Image (cartoon, rainbow, N blue to C red):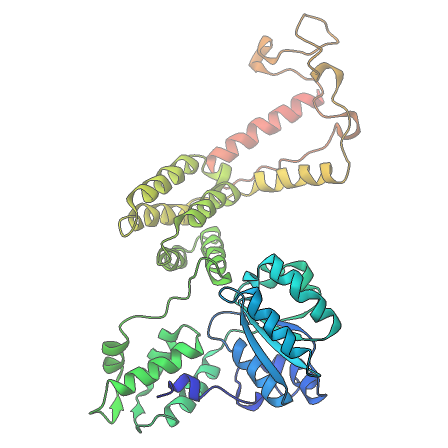
Length: 410
């Protein structure tokens, strides 16, 4: 028996929801199909969002020969067979699933046939092709991103799926909303959940939210560490901590913990600490390190304890990005050629020997400070660090900084 998700797969653009910018009335891909030809393209977006569905609908609407190739499991021999068959036809579309995993030798073999038009490829990937697909392949394709579904799109898909069930059954509004939420934006998962709930409720005419919860049990967590969704969630955690939103920070931490891959998470926490907290709370660095090392040693589920503690403290900590702004400005000067030779007294050929024209050793002066030039002549008055008043610690640094600047002026 064919699964409901397979039976409901649209054969034309008219039955595809949520991607109007591509296949709607004025969609760019629809306009290509209406003219009878689609060039090589790459479709990318989150899992279960309709990439393969659009690819198959293109082939069906154009009424052309097509083949499929999975870059992670199929070999070059299969690709050679596909190319041999394509050379006997006028127009063949090759749907390449997981195109970001295509091996270099396979790419090298495929490229000239794409160049000559022997095959037109439709690449499918969950990973941003600008980061993951080789430039050689990508430069020969138009790249289109599919949009995540909104609630209205999923509601329409839900109603269509329910009306197509073999057994007529109703869903309460609460049950419908619950299932849509649990599907986490994946159409395939949504339809599978609807089918599963209906099959597990043989003696019921209407599904309540309690029935749905008893059958579904947990949501579809879309958090594969090799996909964009993982790094988007890391970004959500970063921005939530920066914005001092504890609850959002804990939510994204929980989602990342579900992936049980701590290394990218630990690296991001270190980055947040020194990018967004920094001098506003310098004690945070050792605390973050200690919490992350404890988490790595403990593993799940105990790792959630030190990580939750440190994320709460990071979110509520005073924030300062003064050092980030300072080093970026300094790097910009270097990249744009604004520098120069070191002042002679800073070079290793000089040592402190009492020579007034040489290097002045600060510890020999009151307050361990003495006026002398450190920057190259061309930028000797450049200022990078602009202290903030986000904490008493940085206010103290600001006071010393300003005192030094005043002393320079005397």
